[in-house]
Length: 234
Image (tube, rainbow, N blue to C red; front, side, top):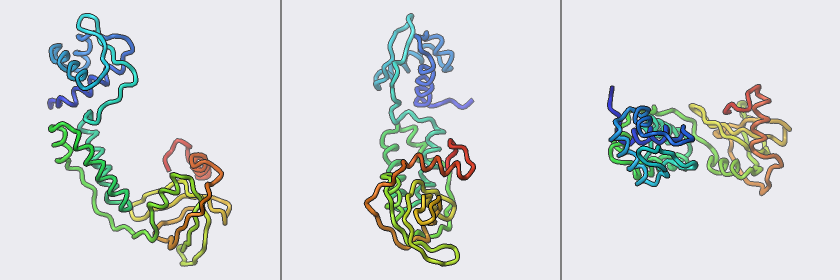
């Protein structure tokens, strides 16, 4: 069996402590985490030094107080790979602002990781292939802002046949596909849900209006209209 890193071992100990609502003995913790009792005591001391509110002592038992949030360094190797893979996908498949944010996230994570885990991040061999994506013809960043603020926008739109129209929409979600981005919205012109590709929006302007229903409610209604479970991601 490949030995786990110290950071992974500390993460495992935190997760085990979280499962117990009453003090648990050092011997039981050592058995659950697969380490010696001496190593267990050292690990508890390390976690306490990092701010973990672990109460108790040898011979009495240990208890992690509720509400403790793991510090950024407490990632497993698999979690780091997931972060790297997801960030690389975002960097290669979204607009410039979101792609830059993904790179910034990785840089911030790398800055607080211990050396052994930073090497895992740097050497991750999970790759995202380059995609032949259609270029957006509108500012997707403004669309994301309108979605966050639940704002009504006006767009000039060209459909698949090339016909142009002006729409006033309530954007509530943005879907990222292999080649295109699609805005999910309530269309005032059609009085129904519609989807609009960002590579076919030639103009976009804000109205200053907030749409009358909450974004979460619109998303839930759209899922029902598509025959989807309301717990399913669009």
